Length: 116
Image (cartoon, rainbow, N blue to C red; front, top):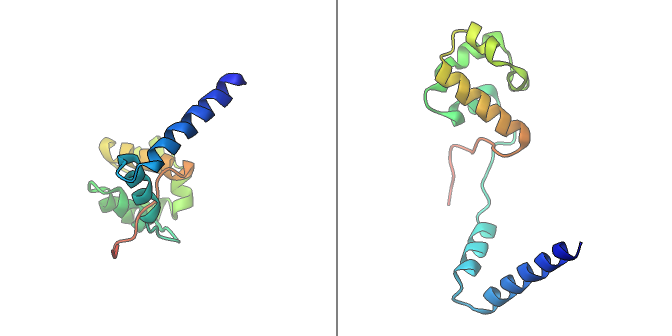
């Protein structure tokens, strides 16, 4: 308990000392990360998802659309199902890795036209 409060105090002391210095690199990083919010697609479809994964995975979009259906069913699909569809190992790994990240909320496809 005391260790947690000590680490919180130390962390706030460090941030406070850096925030007083206008030339602090930490201050620039914090302000840049807050000001630039990424734009995400609101409704993610299966073709958009595969296109965002990249590395040639979008070539299997038609096959997955016919067999799996939509993105929600792709999120539940296992590796053996993808293997039976004839998707190569490298692409299966990419699809499964990005579906897991998408489920956890760690990754989302970005919009195609990012305007500055």
